[in-house]
Image: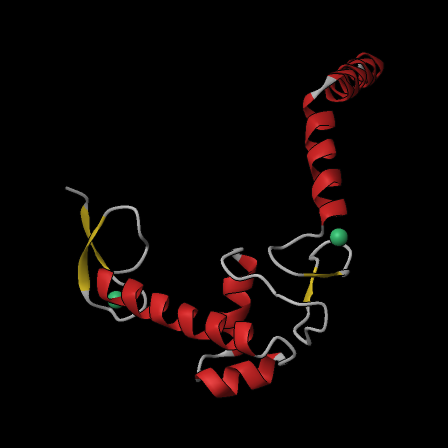
Length: 135
Ligand SMILES: [Zn+2]
Ligand SMILES: [Zn+2]
């Protein structure tokens, strides 16, 4: 089933199911992804502009593969740098370093826990107090 949409990549109409782009573009992206991956596997010391030059794929797109965790920087001597979006530490894949991932998880857990309830109650009391005072 799905619905009919325009592919944001090539503009063609396609049957939208779970993928944001059409089947043809999916294949293209897959090819590009493979090219980048193979190049990095072969030349682990290559830096981003070199990979981009050699594969003909834009740095932006390679970055996206990395951020999506589809591609991982391999080898200790890699010259490709990806930074944690939170603390700027160099990471190999994804958007955050392991430490920040943990911290984000904890923050999420805390904000769902008792701390939030307490803050909300305090806020309410304060508001009521102000309202009484104004009268
Ligand atoms: Zn397309
Ligand atoms: Zn971090």
